[in-house]
Image 1 (cartoon, rainbow, N blue to C red):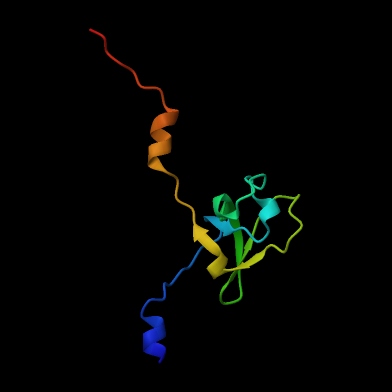
Image 2: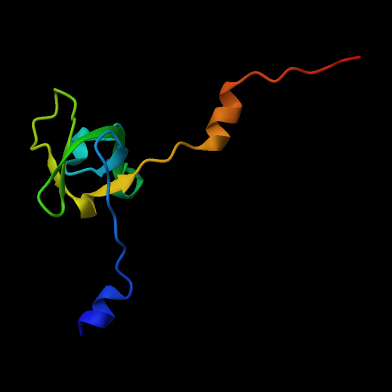
Length: 99
């Protein structure tokens, strides 16, 4: 049975200082909490830095001070943050040569 379960399991490991997205434990923490339809609410918030590795499968995350929740999360609640390269292209002005 173990080989069937582990076949699709992904191995995830983070280091201190890595940026991660945290699964929203409470919809009120989401920026889109004003929306009524839960399907449109943010599933993850971040990026937030990892402070340290705690235990086998848990990480301590640096949370905003106004969040009143525990700062240790299981690895299944975390997702590695990757900045969109397309968004960076929109932030920089494009120079055109009109000659």
